[in-house]
Each structure stands twice: as structure tokens, then as C-alpha cells.
Amino acid sequence: MQYANLYKAETLKSINRFVKDLGTAAKKRGFIIHNEDKMEMAHSFGKHGVKVAEGFDLHMIQICKPEKAAKSLSKNLERAILMPKFVMTFTKDGKTQIRFLSYGKDLIKILVDDPEFPDSLEETYKNIIAMIEEAK
Image (cartoon, rainbow, N blue to C red; front, side, top):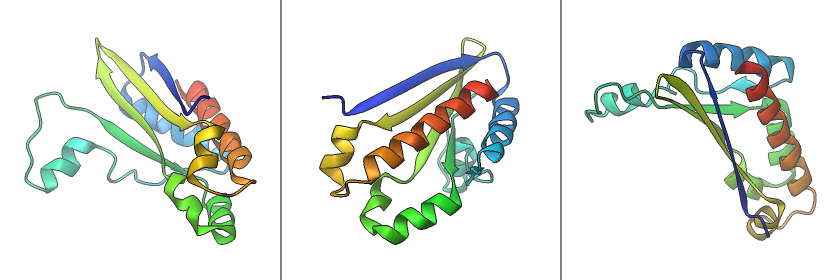
């Protein structure tokens, strides 16, 4: 059984350039970056008075396809637990690192009793990875 998959990639693009290109790739597929104004975690932590290390540049990019999400949640609100999808980016060794965690069908079936949802979610994961590949 495979419960989760970690997609790992890197690019020579800056985080800001990658995010912009990810947004363009997302738009082509009907997705959006939901949290552009809040994805820079250093700023988010700072707003709460929490200091981070010098050079801390983690971005938690929330990907959403509003039309599909609304239809999906209208069918079954229990799906919401697996709806937020985040692409993480940070700098390491002068390169932008990209991470995306997706859940396997076996885990989805355990968490949400909904026979349609695993295939639908898997399709979304494939789209997000394609967007990352295009943007990097």
C-alpha cells in the first residue's frame, strides 16, 4: 500500500519567478494560487511577532481549482480534509527547491468514504505536478 507520494524538484529560477510561472501554468488548467498574499511564511510569522532565521524563504503555495472544488465539496463535505493542496518552495544551495505531497488512493479511501473521490483527487495531483514541471 502506498499512502503518500513526495514529488521533489529544483529549478535555477528564483522563487518569485517560479511562483509567477506556476501561476501561469495553473491558469491554463483552470487553477489559481489561492494565497498569493500570504504564502511567504517569513511575513506570515512576522505578522504574529515571530522572528525567523536570516534568509528564511519558505513559500507555502496553495493551489486551488475553484470550480472543481465547489462541485466536489457540494457532493460531500467530508472531502474538505484533503482539499488544501500546497506546493512548498525554499532555497537550498542556490537553487529553488520544490516539494509537493500527495496522498495515495489507499489512504484517501481510509480517510474519506467516497468511491469517486480517490480518482478525482489523483487527477488533480497529476495536474499539479504537470504545472510544476511546466513552471520549473
